Length: 238
Length: 228
Image (cartoon, rainbow over all chains, first blue to last red; front, side):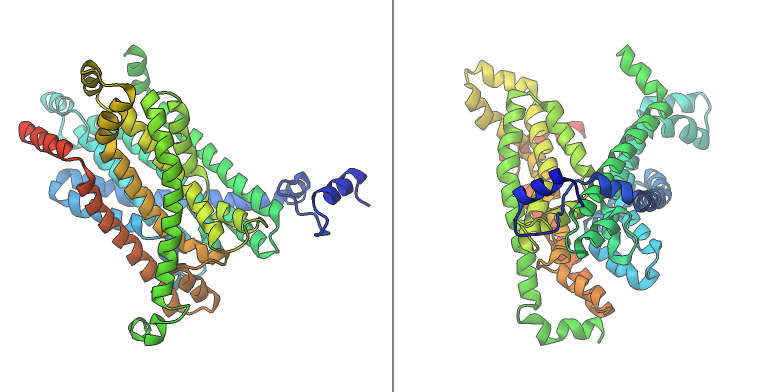
C-alpha cells in the first residue's frame, strides 16, 4: 500500500487517471540507476567518437587550407553544406551503409561537428600574428618547427574553443541516434515516449543529457586553460 | 522502386502524404516557430543591449541553449497532456531551440555598436530612443541578420523531427521509411529535408546581403578599398 500522502496528492491533482505519472521521481532514478549509467556511457562514447572523427578530418584539412589558400572557399562551403543537412537526414542516408551500428550515428554527427572544428581551426591559424611567424623565421625555424612551436600554440585557444562548441552540440544531437538504436539518453527518451508517455524516464534522461553537456563544457574549459597557460598570464598582466 | 521512380510517381505529389503537403507542413512549423522566437528574442535582446545590462544572462542563455537536447524537449512537450503529440509540440520545442542564439546575437549586435558612433549621436543631441532606432538598430542589422539566418536554417532542418512525435513535415517520409524498412522512402525523405534546408540557407544568404543598410554597405566597401 502506498503512503497516504502520495495517494492524497494524486487524488488532488488528477482524478481521471488512476496511475500517477510524475515528471520527477526519485524512485525512478534509484530503481533505474544501472540503465541510466549504461545510457550515459553510451552517450559519452558516441559523443567522443563523433568529435574525435571530426577533429581527425578537420585539422589536417585546416593545415591544407592554410598552405593552399584557394582551397578555403570550397572546403568551408562543403562543411557548410554538411552542417545544414538535417542530422535526421544524415542518419537516414548512412543507415543503408552502416546499418544498425554505432557508426551510423558517429559518422553522421562527425559530419555535423566537422564545420565548427574546421572553421575555428582555419580562423585560429589565420589569426596568428605575422610578426610572430616572422620572428620565428628570423630565428632560423623551419616550416615544421614554425608550425609546431609557433603557429599551432598561438591558434590553440581558437581550435580548442571549436572542439568544445562542437562537443556540446553533439551531446544534444546524439539523442536522435535513438532512431537506429544508438542514442544514449535519447534511446531512453524515445522508449519513454513509446511506453505510454513515461514522464519520469523522459524527464530524467533529458536532464541527464543536459548535465552531461554542461560537465563536458566545464572539462573542456579546464583543458583549454591548462593547455594555454600563457593566455592566462597575459590576461592577468593585461 | 528506385528513387527516380519514387520522385516521378504522380501519387507522391498529391494527397495528404504528398510532397507539396509535407513541404507546406514543414514550412508552416518552421515559420510559426521562428515568428514566436523572433517576437520574444529581438525586443528583449535589443533592449538589454541598449541598456547594456544583464549581458552575463544574455550570453550564458546562448551557451546553455546549446546544451539542451531539442529531441528531449520535443518529447517532453509531446507527452505532456496539455500539448500532446503533433505539430504544436514541435513548434514549442523549436521556439526553445531558436531563442538562445537569437537573443545572444541581438544583445551583442546592439551592445558592440562602435562607441564613437554612439558618442557622435549623443553629441548631436539625439535622445536615448533616437539613438536606439536611428543608430544602434541599423548598425547592428548585419549581426542580427546573421543570427536570424543561422537560427532559421537550423529550425527548418530540425523541424524534420516533428514527425517523430506524430507531427507532419518532410520528416514523415523518414520516420515511415524507418518503420517499414523502405530504403527508397527513407532516402527520398532525407533528400527532401536536406534540399529544403539548403534552399533556405541559399535564400537567406541573399536576403542577408540585401538587408544590410546602404550606409553600412558603402562604409564596408570603403574600408575594403582602404585596407587593400
